[in-house]
Amino acid sequence: MLDRDGVASIAPGLERDYPIGLYTETDGRAEPQKAVPAITAYARRLGVTVLENCAVRAVERTDGAISGVVTERGRIAAPKVVLAGGAWSSLFCRSLGLRLPQLKVIVSMQRTEALANGPDAAIWVPGICSRLRDDGGYTIENGGKYVADIVPDSFRFLLDYLPTVRRESKAMSLRLGRRFFIELGYLKPQGADGISPFEKERILDPLPDSAVMAAVPRLMAEQMPVFSGLAIAEQWGGCVDVTPDAIPVISPVEQLPGFFLSTGYSGHGFGLGTGAARLTADLVSGRAPVVDPHDFRFSLQREGQGCIWNSGLAGIALTRPTLIAHAPGF
Image 1 (cartoon, rainbow, N blue to C red):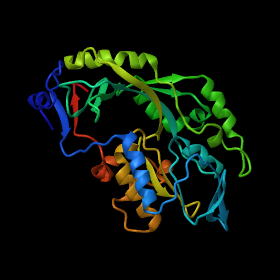
Image 2: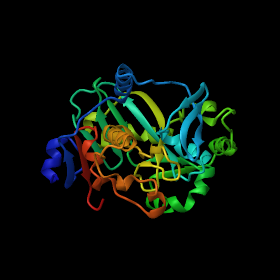
Image 3: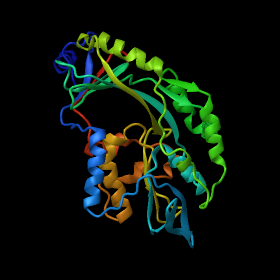
Image 4: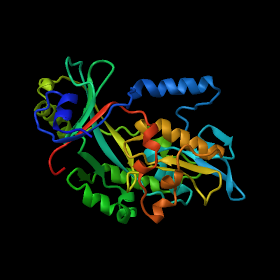
């Protein structure tokens, strides 16, 4: 925990006076665009088969337990299956008769050109987030603004998300449009022989929110003058799989022996990925879990809410030396 002087020493040049901050010196850093292909290549060297552009249409069951999956390229026998489908997980669970409260929100991001003399630590202050990239630029976003499309599942899970909607009303923009009708068409059962929604729309690639994106460079410059004249190289939007309590589900499913969930990371999937993957593997293999899995159990969706920060999972995550500064009353 930092006082006013500590915040200023970690992020010199902050225009606003932040009397308190949290700094995590031991965090690390990685580039998603480089890390994910590298992890995949390493897994293949270990003998893992990775099938790209190959949707799973259905899960097969024998005597009530998992026996395999049916993909668009054929059947794969498997006594254990992990669904780590991100924003698609809830829809897939529906086909199995499982209720998984999970919705999507759209977060808008930008990448800047290289900037000299900018802050080294990742910074979160009200309104903006910034992270230094290997190319000398920054990945930036408005850390408190996102869009939530109204879809059929918005009504299905309305009671689950009402507390979140009330709490996040200032940050969240609700939008009713074409997405509602697209997902309405996904509710019709397809079967193992039909074309699945995961083939009709292989990649969720939403447009970024132009209003949010236009404001971020200005907000950055207001916070730190070194960001004045920031040149934007790229911008994009992404779908985040959000659970009602923003805590992932990493768990076996008792109703379907051999079926496991690892989903609902609520925007923290890359940072928590190393620890979450270890916990998932422990549960599937029957090893002693690396952390207590109690707070991530699937049944929690009916019982109440847990707390990821008391679980230990965040302690083995991969993020970035980070400063979080708070204004009075925040």
